[in-house]
Length: 331
Image (cartoon, rainbow, N blue to C red; front, side):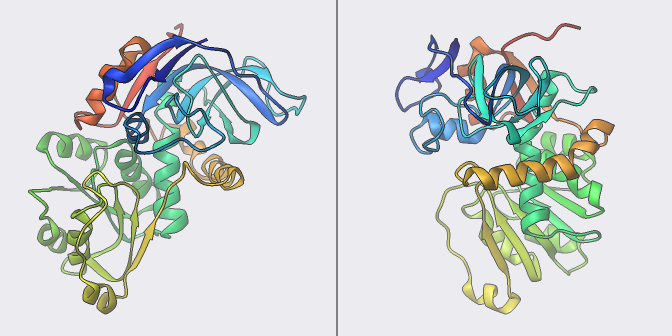
């Protein structure tokens, strides 16, 4: 099969398309013919040698999500049939013609989605829902602050907040991304000038502060978040684009009784990943099928342009997802 291989740690130029052996589905697994996948920050970090794949996933093939059709079944479990349209998440390896995954980590692609659209769903929506709803308990009427609201997870969080009746505030570093986020349903866009936006957030919330923060940037952003968080509010740290180090006011942490959580999905044990996936199927997939939750796609590129796609995401040019199409879908 054709796969995108990391030849050595480095920039986008270290990615190469090579012919390698096809993986085989074992008990409880299926093999999927990948028709589309997406570029995520984790792929860039893996390529750079900064975020190794889990032990049960390919070390040199990036890719966390996929959409395609069932090609091989490891045993007769009866869950899926060969030829069914499916999508899901893996620890790595979806930049390839075929990927093997646990049958319980798959979902059927709704009829209203193409493979390209479906490939833009899993990582963004699973990560966002797990962080702000499952872990942080975001509820109706609460204020949610989303950093990097134009990212894949950010655009998913905007829609999830609207779905559950929360009030979302989103930051981005360009006016263009804020306007596109507003068109997506973000009622309160805020320009992140330097690393200062807490005054604007406090004004929007009438001086109360936000109840929950989805922090996708990390670094100095967390200290600014502290300034506009309400008492007993929750912050979920998902990304570290601004770095892994910062200075925080522990006095603010104590006085406001803040709850700070860090979360990752990729390195969790299989059963935990399956539980998160099943939560997505129960709570979000019906809304994807109805069209209420929609994939946000910045650009679709052919698989041969994988290095270009990585550069596009690494430079922060994308609003929503960058998709790699391996098999053009017939109309």
